[in-house]
Length: 210
Image 1: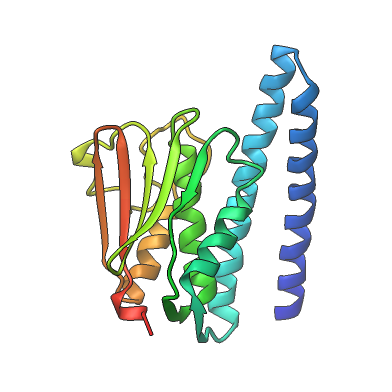
Image 2: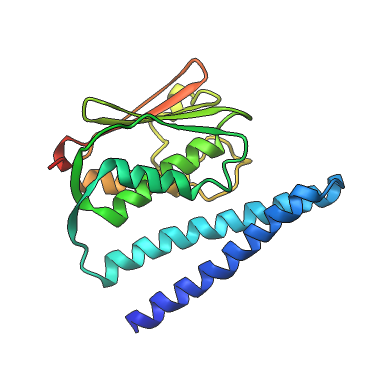
């Protein structure tokens, strides 16, 4: 049963990724506004499905697998996570300013899910031609993006399940609640700063550094 679930989940991911890739190829040569709007809706729906896939994959892994804490380089996993978004970041610049040999020991899949969600949000809520900066401040991993400031009153709700700053966004608002769950479990402190049209999320990695 476990094997069947994993195989089925993988089979869901593959066709959705194929639809998304071909949609992007068509968009490059299309000029009709209505057609571009339809393609954008297809793209948003595909991204929603890929978000669901990622969340289901990790949730199932937690339930049916034994999660092992392993050692890995911070710089490696951040680089791979950035590469994952090459096709969807469009005109947004992702600046990886990490230059470190820091080794972490934790649930690697869970940490990857955290990174993917944070970078995905940084892209989603960014300005056109905006920037994302990823850097280390002592043992704080910082992911900073251009974009509208988060209202102060909403900073206390941002990690709630289904919360979204922009109600018109695609997605289901699950990403940051998953981030919070992982960080709480692994004693990773989170801080958010949002001002001057820039939002920075900081993760204190002290408790998982080898």
